[in-house]
Length: 143
Image 1 (cartoon, rainbow, N blue to C red):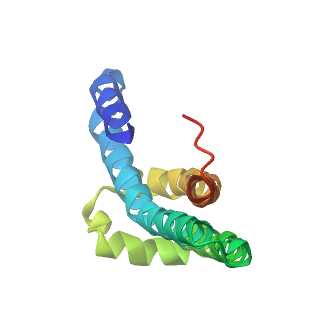
Image 2: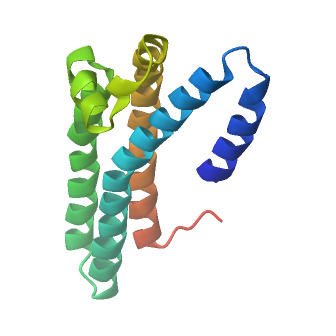
């Protein structure tokens, strides 16, 4: 779904005055966000599996412990990622890994602002991904 949304944004960004710069900012921020969300997806799937297996074998206390462990692990991880994305010193390191330092100064300046928003969205989305994994393990699907 995010890829379809990104394609639509990329197509509509050609109407903006600085289309190339806006596309650079969107592509880098989407790649950073997608990379960091992989850890949340893994934690959500592991929570789903542990909780479901524990309930399947009739061990509700073990399922509760697995759910609490997953819910507890996601909070420091989201905070750590948010600080890594939003802190300018950490962003310089991420930018070097992604070869962002070869982009123009305007793009780098705009990326620093956008990454703060990406950090906030990552915090909320990371919590949601892991909590939905716990609910899937319990068997409460919402779709």
